Image (cartoon, rainbow, N blue to C red; front, side, top):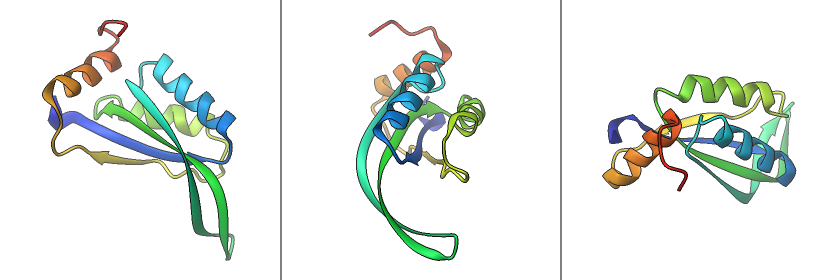
Length: 111
């Protein structure tokens, strides 16, 4: 399962948006887990450098679930152009990778 494990990142402006996206993606079994971190972002947008506080979401999912996760994030995301980036996992504890796979299939235990 390790070869199928992905970490998917996105950012939003508010904690409420982060909480809503995290809960929705996990409840829909598109991600086994979502982590939220407060960050500072500096970026180009509409011809100027912007600096904002944001919240980064890190979703743990599989390559098979990525298309559905991306579609759900795009539909629910408050940004005009959301950054949605998937990173493959090169190494992981096998039991953890199995857990991510089971939870995103919906056949894992409730723990």
